[in-house]
Image (cartoon, rainbow over all chains, first blue to last red):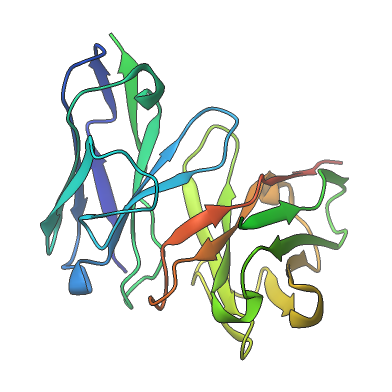
Length: 109
Length: 121
């Protein structure tokens, strides 16, 4: 079973700053099948990135994903007020399909 | 426009059965996986399972297999999540979500609004 560990638990930043979120897998993820989601309070999650680095439809280019095997990163180049939310990574390879990380909260400093 | 509209909130007692629904529109229902994700109060996301309506191929989280049943009715473009005997620990928000085409299993690119299930005596 693949376990995803996200860090940090909480990231306190100001609008305009760069956010770097980490997702580490306990085993290598096949074909870099890793996604990132954003969830705001009271809302359903929204897909941001899939296949580690492909932006989903309609996602602004300030969101980017990178990484491979066991180490993945979501970067928000310049935080907008609407970007303060909780972010989850998810792996969807054939081992332990669908497992999510525990989330990183990006809050206003 | 893709839409996933879920059934309303439910309040049940332990031991009762329940079936919640997710009606899809705006795309070919049979051609995308559709899945369920659980979120317990103030907690993170948990993958429950998925179904491919085209052939009813169904996969479950190992930790939830046997606890829930996922099904789909192609004729009305609706997916279901059901319990035979609810427990207090089933209290959560349940989201249905459409799988991104071309991946098995898939990430989820469109989501329903969620169904809150509360189990309490």
